[in-house]
Length: 83
Image (cartoon, rainbow, N blue to C red):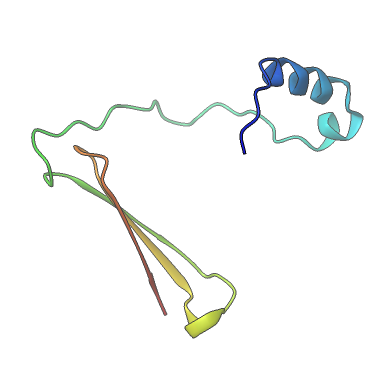
């Protein structure tokens, strides 16, 4: 099921600006300590990004970790779970 709401962005911006709780508890915007830069590669599988997210609450099969691997050239993503 899809919906078309052309003014969604404008509507929620107006709502958040008028909402007292949204203004008091919103995330503060801070300047990054370093400048961001583009990571470029010459070919696929030349440079990878690896992120390990943990710990998660113990769930089915006692899996606690999430490993995310990204190939910077093709933007291919692999995700694995581990204990």
